Amino acid sequence: MTYDTTATIRKVTKTLSSKFNLAALPSTSAAALQNSLRVYIQVQQWLGNNRDLTEWGWFMKDGGFNLVPSTLLAASEVLLQLIPCNCKITLTRDCNVRCQCKKADIYFTKFCTYCLGETCKNSATHTSGFENDDVE
Image (tube, rainbow, N blue to C red):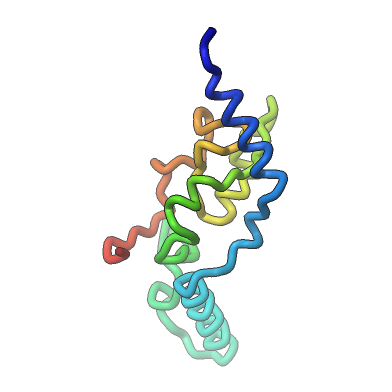
């Protein structure tokens, strides 16, 4: 008899996801800093003071401005690997549409409910357009 790891992971994921709320994770100080930069630049624009957006929490990608994600992880790498995203795959919708991990700027983990990383478009090979090599 072979051991079905997929079924085991699904059971663990179901248990974790019923008790876990991704939105309940507190913001890191790095994420708060990025949000403060965006608030500052918004106030400056309202006051008519033009500033370079790339110096205040934005980066240029594909001809448009995008928000700089936090320069630090939302939680420790170990904790992030335990977060299930509860995405749902159907014939007309892949897990990318409702993925809580993607919305929180976190890549999928082995506990993702349906895709298990096999068909996920939110994999670690995807880049946000912002890399910070100085983060330790």
